[in-house]
Image (cartoon, rainbow, N blue to C red; front, side):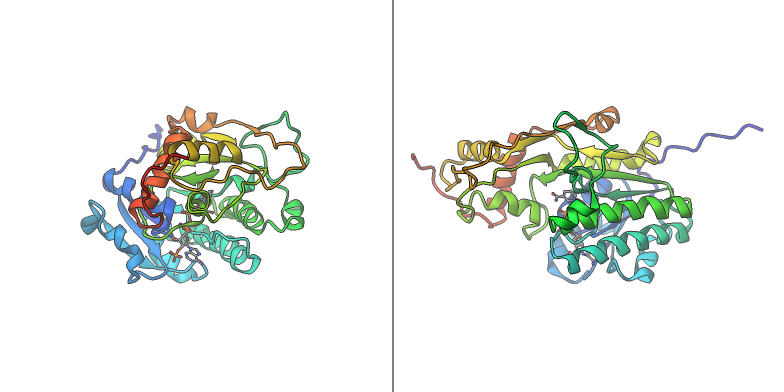
Length: 335
Ligand SMILES: NC(=O)c1ccc[n+]([C@@H]2O[C@H](COP(=O)([O-])OP(=O)(O)OC[C@H]3O[C@@H](n4cnc5c(N)ncnc54)[C@H](OP(=O)(O)O)[C@@H]3O)[C@@H](O)[C@H]2O)c1
């Protein structure tokens, strides 16, 4: 008997669910999916909230976007949204270090989404938006190690340092793999570093706030810290690629363009926007300057994902914050 290979499913007649559709990353993903011809069922907690109007204004939304009301802790509402879908992008999550607000919705919500995908019976693959926070928080990793998809954060370390966001994302990703295995759901995971770039949604999300604070005067100093950065449009493209590529099943994908010390971020911002009070002093004048870790984004590059340079992304983040009215436009000044 000849068994035909499973077809690779791209756009066309496909319906996919995006959880937390109004969020920063999800909004770009919904836009991209609509452009590619997908029909999208986007979950939001309140479809009538004007903060979701940007979704309805997207090209193709009138014909191919349905907003479904669903909290991550409401299994029946999630199942209703996922029913009939060929794929699920699970991006919704609290983004906070408050343990009570973070851990349960992140973990139980993820289990709910994967269980609902199994029960729906039509879902070919779930793509889960995890985080670099589920990868790098490990004090025992040597400086020579190249951070790749085999690395996992240490839960005890996250707990002891009260990094509840990383703790929640790590447990949520572990739960995703566990439930997917138990229920026979095909899973692929994207692990983005800090995401920046233009905003589609009206409100400032946590990672855009990370950049805004260096421009609006609210951060007087920068931390002695390093962080990975990536553009939101590349993160959306990575999600779609990981959904469509047959070879992505069962794998994690680190989504990062570059790792920078905070000093490099503020220097770039100061050069691009000399009119803003960008800090030029580090809050830590005692310890040696932290060194960026080595990382690999080969897995996504092999799938054909390309990354915009961080400097372009920083520029467009600031411009977008101006356009949305979060950052007053100032005339250029000579300092
Ligand atoms: N931005 C980054 O730098 C970054 C980096 C790595 C990973 N990630 C991950 O990427 C995903 C999206 O992040 P983002 O930056 O786009 O954040 P965001 O703009 O804050 O969006 C988060 C979304 O999750 C939804 N949500 C939160 N709690 C919920 C709950 N209990 N039930 C239903 N929906 C809930 C929010 O819905 P409401 O609109 O109803 O509040 C919102 O739409 C998250 O999983 C995050 O952990 C983000």
